[in-house]
Image (cartoon, rainbow, N blue to C red; front, side, top):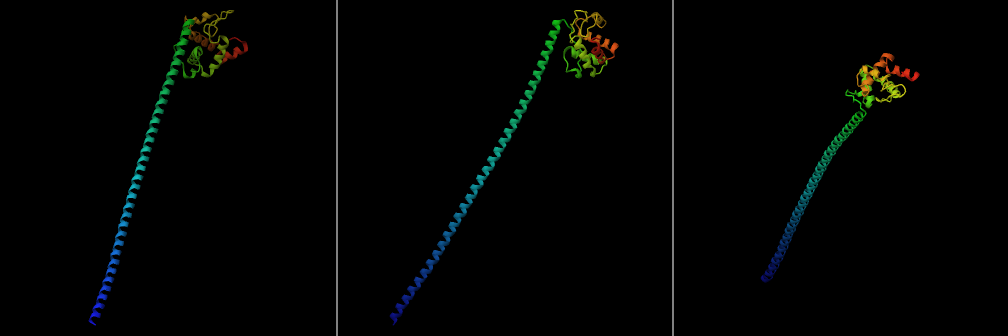
Length: 232
C-alpha cells in the first residue's frame, strides 16, 4: 500500500514538474516573443527615423539647390541688364559722335565751297525756327526774323528768291546785269550795306529785305506782286 502511494506521489510529482515546465516554457516563450516584438518595433522605429532624416536632408538639399539656382539666375539677369544698358549707352554715344562728325564735315564742305567761290560765310546765329534750312536760305531766314518779319513770311521769301536767283549769291543776269540773291539792278546798289556785296550773301540779303520792306511791306507782298508781274 505504501509502495502504491509512493508510486502515485512520484507520478503526481512528475506530472507537476511537467506542468510546471510547460508553464515555464510558455512563459519563457511569451517573454521571448515579447522581446522579439520589442526589438522589431525598435528596428522599425529606427528605420523610420533614418528614412525621415534622409528625406529631410534630401529636401534641404533640394531647397538649397533651388535657392542657388534662383540666385544664379538673378545674377545672370542683372549682369545681362547691365551689359545691355552699357551697350545702349555706348551705341548712343557713338551715334552722337557720328552725327557730330557728319555735321562737322558738312560745315567744312560748305566752308570750302564758299571759299572756292570767293564767298563770305555767315557768322551769325541761326534760330531753331530756321534750322530746317541750309546755306544761304538759313542765312536769309535768320536775317528775315532779325528784320522783324514773322517766320510765316519765309515761304514767300523763299519762293521769290528761288525764282530770281535760286539763292545763288553769285547769280548774274547776262542781259540786265542784275546781281546776287535779290537780283539787285544794278548790283552796286547793295554797296550801301557793305563793300563785299559781290561775295557776301548776308550783305545781299540785308539789302534785299530792306528793298522789300520799303516797297512791298513784306516778303508775301513782294511775292504776290511777282506772281502778277514776274518781277518785283
